[in-house]
Length: 256
Image (cartoon, rainbow, N blue to C red):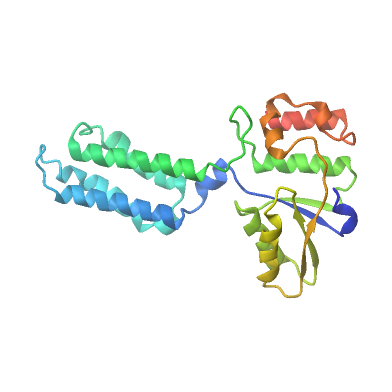
C-alpha cells in the first residue's frame, strides 16, 4: 500500500499461472519439436522391419494420431496433446504392448508426458499440502487488503493474460498507458530493477515515463514462508488494519 500515496492509481498484476490456464495455452516451440521426435520415432519403428509378429503395420494407427497432432502443433494445447497421446498409450497399445516396437513407442510417449507436465506446471503456487493457490484466490485476497486500508477506489487488481509478470507488465505499459508516469514496483529480493530497466530502455510507447521505484516494506513473512504456513494461518501475521472478519474470509478463500 506504500505506492497509493504516490500515484493516482495502483495496478496489481497477478501472473496467470494455474493448471487450467497452462493446460489450455498453445505449446512452446521446444515442446512442439519433442512431439516431432515422437512422430519420427514411430516412422523409424515402422521401417525397421516387422520381425515380431509383423508389428510394423500395427503402428499405422499410432502414426496417424501423431501426424494429426503434429499437423496442428502450432495451436495445440497441453490438454489436447495429452488426450491424443493417451489414445495411443491406453486402449490402442493394449493389444500389443508386450511386444518390442509398441512398447518402445509407449514408453517414449509416457516419458514425454511426464517431462512436459513437470516443466509446464512447476511454477504453480501451492501450499504446504500441495493444494493449488489460484490467481483468482490471490486477486480476492488483494482486494480484501485494499478494502481494509480504504484504498479500493485507487487499487485495481488484475489477473494477467500472461504467465510471466514481466511480459504482462511490458504489455500493460506499452499498450494501455499513454502520457503516463509509471512507477514499477521493485522488491528487496534483487533482480527486479534490471528487469524494469529493460522495459525502460525498450519502451515502445515513448509518451510514457517509466521509473523503477523501490519501496521499503517490512513484513514478518516472505511470500514463500506464507505459502508454507497457509494450512495453519496465524492472525498475528496480518496487519492490524485487517479485521478478524477479513482474516476469516482470507482463511475461507485459501481453504476453499
